[in-house]
Amino acid sequence: MQTSKRPPAKYQPKGLPVLYEDKDIIVVEKPGGLLTMGTERDKSRTAHSILNDYVRKGDPRSRNRIYIVHRLDRDTSGILIFAKSESAKIFLQGNWDSTDKHYLTIVHGSLTPKSGTISSYLTENSAFNVYSTTDPAAGKLSHTEYKVLKEVKGFSLLEIHLLTGRKHQIRVQLSENGHPVVGDRKYGKGNDTYGTLALHARSICFTHPVNGRRMTFETGIPDFFIRLVGKEETKNAP
Image 1 (tube, rainbow, N blue to C red):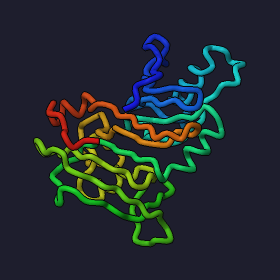
Image 2: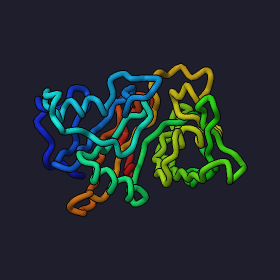
Image 3: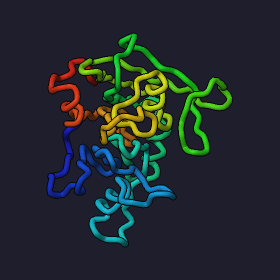
């Protein structure tokens, strides 16, 4: 796991821990509830705006800016990569297929089999709801690899290897297979009383856009997960 060049805590953007920073990229751990970027419908404070302010160091005339490489849903926590130049962004997005992404999630129920790959064609309707379709021409083929790490009290802790990166992919495919993510008010159970979405982007491995080195970053298990399934460390987690 990369630990070098992490800025001192007093210089970090408030509420958005920086895991790594150099002249080309910045890697952060986004908390749940924070948008990656603004939308036409929601222009509240975002990870993107926080980091733009951070790299401009209070100078609104600064030419420094942050470029979005990928996104996490508002309620999903975990690792996000941002670029500091257009060329770095283009490289990272162009090599996204070789980027290795692992998540942790807690779902309702017990899965059978205990490991496997969920595949379906995902599409979106006019109400912005994503769902699987049997028509290959109407959706994008999406693959989610999962492995059960622990089962307790009607919950299953899963390691997810995201093989494709469609909008709401993990949440939709698990829900359609009868095991919605805990706290998912959009695709989950109507009687789910948990206010926190149990989905966390735990690790990522990618090629640096300038020096070409493979870089890996990993975070711990969120406190919400520990409250649901206990403190036992998951030996098989990424």
